[in-house]
Image (cartoon, rainbow over the protein chains, first blue to last red):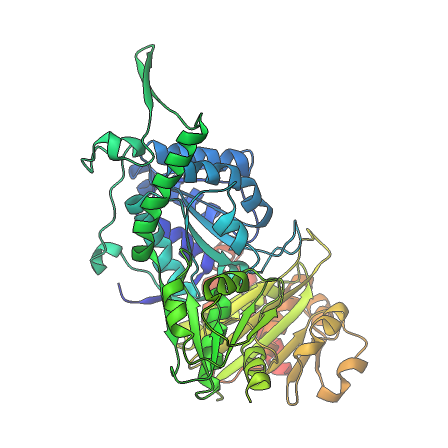
Length: 374
Length: 183
């Protein structure tokens, strides 16, 4: 099982969902994510797929797909979607509802160029949309893998986070990661001692033996029986300002408790290095190589969760840094999060290297560090 | 062999740019090398220019793109301009001279001209095998790849096509050998 395979990122994502025990996939094709749908459709139609009850549904559009996904998760199905760019925009309506009702959907997002159709391959410009795309007061988890192995690892982990903490959970990749081929180790999570969280008809939380009045937000369920079929009708809107405040604060409390357990980051390089690079995803991978080439001049802080953002760890990492360099394939999306975190914490100047929708090579980062190194 | 050998190939959509790069990267992996491949293309359904990047070596990095190439391959005239920026001192340049007529931009790299379009048409009577000719030429120029094992890998990739039309196997092999011999 420890053998490495040569696979495309989208196949790695699809296999991660399969390994995590997902059974439902609802989507609408878009570059650079369509191969996930293709792989899942084929798997669902295979003998084993049929035996395991896999569902594949290509909806009429991303709006339909994302609400089907939400419904599947509400009904207790471990389900996911994949989308990108304009598709990610369309799905935000359902994702926002998932924040309100804490529906544990999983979405793989393969960032492409923006705004609008733009380019079909690559960018890092869906950070703000993916992390904060709802219409406010919502909470969601966003993982940002940096290579093919992490696509697999976090592709699996996303399901556990979603179902354990009951927040919609995203894996934010990009078109390079999705379309590239390279080596990756595919494993069965059970062999690694990874226990997969159980699923259930979500709002009732029966398996967790949690009284319904302790579930946040407290669901209101109306059971209706028609022609012998039982329908559970969940309330998904609030009426009063006071109630809205109360429910929002309850969800916030739940998030504040969960966030420190969810936050992840990586630091790399000599911690005495003067220059601190903050980068995520595939630019994080390039930065790591740059650190190796710079021989002690620079170190890396790589947020793995973009939400919750690993703020305490970044505040610690910035100590001793004489300058902070933030390279990203977008205009001020990661750097906005960094500034928000570091306000009042450091006097080190921040050099923002914004390259919307274009890759940032290792050499480019090396040059950038050298240019500012005094 | 240097640590990582970087390859860029560019051409018109439909010429097989992505397939060539994928097959080379996969074959390198199968031969025990480290390899990574990434495509770049645009939104056009047809008529677009498409680029592919592959890196092969003993320790290939996670980041799939690079600034300068060791092997640079243009399958069409438009490709020459598109990937011109990936040239450096010492880059090996291979062109499909059937479509790349103006070499002025790349003259100083002394391009290896493979008239793959003409060879495919006239010698093999099958225009589509021009990319097998180009692949043969490329493999010759990539250090550390075993030719026989590469050809065996090709048989594997096209197994289902060969099952339907066994004559394709010999045709592809011959086209590949032809390109290999020319580079």
